[in-house]
Figure 1 (cartoon, helix red, strand yellow):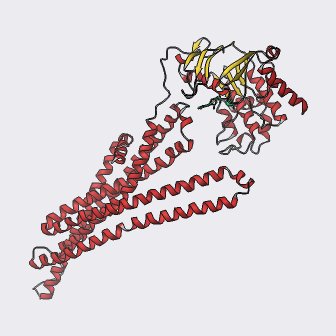
Figure 2 (spheres, protein in one colour; figure 1 turned 120 degrees about the horizontal axis):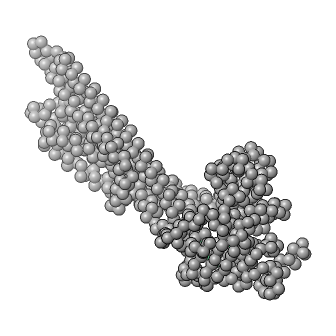
Figure 3 (cartoon, rainbow, N blue to C red; figure 1 turned 180 degrees about the vertical axis):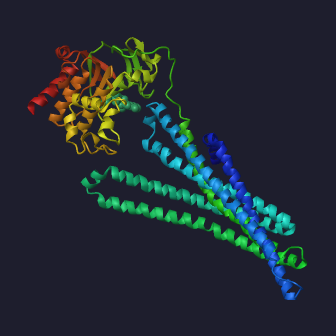
Length: 592
Ligand SMILES: Nc1ncnc2c1ncn2[C@@H]1O[C@H](COP(=O)(O)OP(=O)(O)OP(=O)(O)O)[C@@H](O)[C@H]1O
Ligand SMILES: [Mg+2]
């Protein structure tokens, strides 16, 4: 079974806690043995009591209850109970420890894996899918290991020890009980495989409903706007009904298992009772051991039901493990030959030397681009949407590697240094500012983790955002919620500027915010950006050309090529693409 192989691979995560793991197995063995002894010990008491009674009825001289012997049996029973419960506790406690620690290690591995993946991985995979691997898949494994492992082992041991006990007590009768085992297994397999296909149907129906709900929540405003509430409710009801039907079918089939295996056990009871009482009359079996046999029938068949039921959980855990390992085996950002390092501070000379690149080999994007930027210069990149502006920056940061040519920072080919060595010299202010769920203070401190509160506030002042933060309820202590929807886009951008000020990068990349900002905020952002750009090499992806008139170099891009480059004045004088673009924006602004 493929799932079993994946579960076996989980051993890597459990073996660090081997000692406790084997202690857990030891506890299970002890409790299983104690469990198998129970019917036998009770049988001893029953045999003695019936013998005493029979003697008393027959009027045997000095007959009566043999209390000293019965007390010994009671003590034995009690000691057995201690081993049984003690063993169970030990098994569960140590296993919980092992599983929880192992799964923590697994989650850590997944998390560090995420950080080693190339950016291109996220072009091909959905975030939600990765998220579900970290959360629900790990959860499924944790539950399966914690609950099922002990129970399955317990069940197998219980069956084995019960068989050993029965064979020692009476071989022919043991044979009768053992014969029912394959019958119970066959029935269990048939029912389980039938229920599994309907459980799959249930999971699909649930996923279907989940996806629909998520879509609706995402498009909440649009649904209201277009008055589609009724349609949405009808569709939800239809999917919900489907889930009910699938769920009912799955539960119905799987709930047949216990009663049917129970029926087989009852059948075995009858035979054991009939054959057993015959042996008892002949004196080949004591009355107590006959009673013990009846209980062993149960000890053999009940675990079969349990194991069959757990096999479903084990299978889905196997599938979950498969998905996680597939993710962990994903190829990582490859690091070519690292031959050198950048100094602590770089001057900021950047050179694109005949580079070519495409996201997809079938769709060539950039070919032979060359640009030279001197330290401290401000470079503006302009052009229509899809021109390749963001791509140029992605290449500079090595989110993607160039296919041909080279990019040099201070004369060093960036392929010859590690990505982290390169990226620590860069600061980025992006269009969709990224904030996470924590206080404003911590969000800003992300730029430099060891910054003091004073340093953070100072950076916020430079970024023109200190005043705004102070007017927030709770000021710097205000919690940003998960979607960061409780502050506006422009304010978010000011905050990321403050973060960048704090990190004090050598080279700056700004992806200019577009329309969604009001003019007052726009002016604040512009001022803040001017301040951070001072004295650093900066690349500005600009949409409003008015903001880049004083750039040292303007790159005009279209369809993956640089079609014009120069200063504002020289480009205007050329009267080409840029001049057209500028004039059209300018006349629009003038007309407003
Ligand atoms: N991750 C990606 N995978 C495949 N193709 C991509 C990817 N990112 C961008 N592209 C394609 O590459 C081209 C350049 O995109 P890029 O994002 O660099 O444009 P842009 O100039 O930044 O546009 P915008 O002004 O809209 O931000 C586009 O055709 C785009 O569809
Ligand atoms: Mg872009």
